[in-house]
Image 1 (tube, one colour):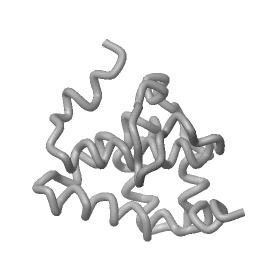
Image 2 (cartoon, one colour):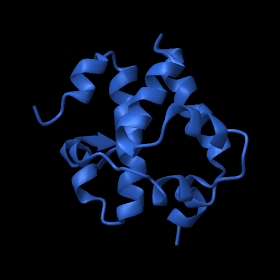
Image 3 (cartoon, one colour):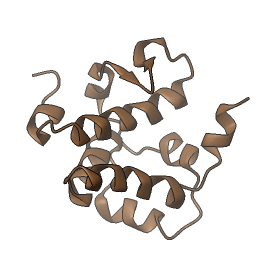
Length: 118
């Protein structure tokens, strides 16, 4: 299964790429952490600790302590793939975070990104 390669990647190798994407567009590490906390229920300290451990990217999403119910309201495309068409539940969770970081990098305000469902 092709997704297994992504699921088995180290969290510490993938998450910094999301931060770099945001920072390249003058956004901050703190904003990426806030989005990730909102989505997953992890604290910023927990996420920071994963950056020095051996947690896989798949396990990061499999073990989300409190997935935000509003994440289901995230719509659109990531890498040309509509979120609504993703059948693998774990890949969908991964793509939700990708979409949030994309929106941040495109200049959306944090308030606009996080106010889903209001």
